[in-house]
Image (cartoon, protein in one colour):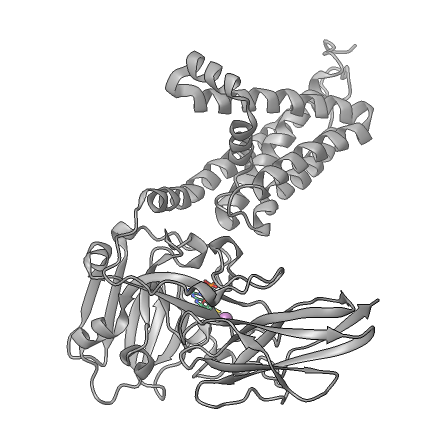
Length: 508
Ligand SMILES: Nc1nc2c(c(=O)[nH]1)N[C@H]1C(S)=C(S)[C@@H](COP(=O)(O)O)O[C@H]1N2
Ligand SMILES: [Mo]
């Protein structure tokens, strides 16, 4: 005797739906933990909105009104359930096709995540996790498929259904926690998008007309935010709501200060161009960029706090536990050391420190450029250490004079070749750049107009190139007469030195 027979597609279809629910749920949790703006369901929804023709959008709004987004999500849900059931049935008959179907869904999700504005490679992780988890769960569930039709008294159906139900419940719980974790990031993103930067009290001097030499392939003088290098220890970008942001200034001071966001943005803000650079930038490297920053001079806040005479360091701390040890002097002298809220005319991007970070001309980022800054502790170098100092890097990190060749790269045609690049020595300024060909004498390059001593400057050299392989080197001289050393040093503990050297194949 046997029990009633169910259609052969039923259990595989249930397995498909449960496996996809499991995979997507886990992926939403991973998104919440790692990449809060890469929820697979939401990025696919956003992509569909972006690619939908306008008649479809109009029709959706006419049909669903303000519930159009809910309707879209319900629609995505229905399609997902259908595809998941299809994948389950396929897996039981043509496993390769089922894998392809799930992989295609996964690739769609990955593309949707990484083509979003401001996306990073980490945003590919949730959809990848969804694909792998759904594939594994489907195989595991189908291995537990009941015998059909089962002999009387056989429990394999019940066992299968509890496995499938369990996978679905785990998926749902993971999705709920994932969405909760993502919502913090969504709130802060929305706050940032609706915030308009205050008008500066002191505008930056305009970029001089001659700052940009107009050479193809040469680094632009101002680095767009999307191209600005990003370095930090934050696996998850902190979500700081300006409404609850506070900066506490304390330690060796006469007056402790607590500053709110509203107080900060009401202060007279100043614009300045500053080149920011990472100590981990190798000779010729790309971990350097220049932006127009908007912020408030830290020296003004310190003047109110009144550091005591024994203080010589400011340990700035971020909300996520990073800290930087800046010499007190660099924050109290006349340079543009600021608490920045704006970058190239926009509120700071989240990954560059929203809502507030420090920018200090002349110091490497690891000892000065604290993002998501919430605390300035006035202290002493013999009493406290910054995050990277504890890991073997130098306690003080003044930038070293540097220069880089951007063009040509690899090869060039014989005749006049424009060699060009950038050079920088923030807060000192560049007085000259020289180029040497095949270890020949140093020859002066032409310098573009610098924005200020706090920024890099473009340079250009016209080279009459003969066919063959040639070695080009560059070195800079600073305004105070320092000539960039040829001595090679690695990035640790306080910044690389040496001349950037490139080999060019000149062809007829
Ligand atoms: N909170 C926080 N701020 C930080 C860091 C960090 O790890 N955490 N890294 C610093 C380092 S080493 C550099 S080089 C700069 C880089 O700033 P950017 O990512 O905006 O280019 O940020 C600095 N500020
Ligand atoms: Mo850095």
